[in-house]
Length: 113
Length: 120
Image (cartoon, rainbow over all chains, first blue to last red; front, side, top):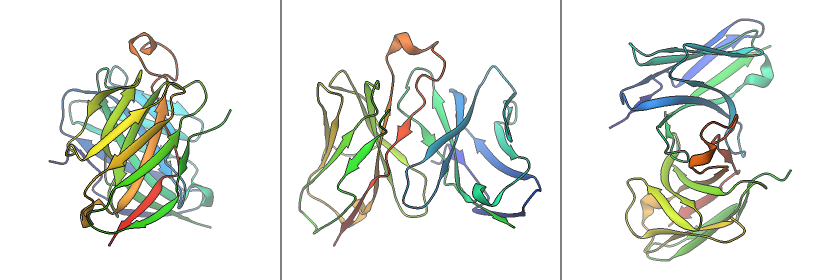
């Protein structure tokens, strides 16, 4: 049972344009959502997060949007840069299970110069 | 500030053997979580350790076990290895505990680079 889904295995965008990565979840108990980025041979690194009491969180070029009624979140990267090319994982957490994240399958983002 | 370090980076075992993977948590962190990432999949939660005790477990059999030491480092042990255990094993640390719930940045996991296990 995949509780967090990233339905796009890959995404290709041009440098300077917007990248939009999507994530859907099914578990209503999830109340905190995170995006991680992973380069080859490295561990996932934290990018941005959002609590379920918010619908938007922004950090520089990165914005995460949360639509609780649709159980959907998205990550916007504007403008996209070649260095953003990586695998992006959406993750969710329920309550005080701090170390337990449920991850999606990941989306490979490629930003072309 | 040192990050999360894991050892070994790569190892090969045969079916039925046992393996121990090690993790040093980031300084200031007191909680360690372990994840298994199969090829083409997202990381899957194995278990978490806080104050040297298992504090949450995912859908993994008892042959997956762990330890946390007083310095917050941790080990993951897997007995009776199976072919499907071939994966990247990720360790993550955080500052956890119930008092941390309101602290900015608390409970964001910091991951190590992982240990790649191949079971033949």
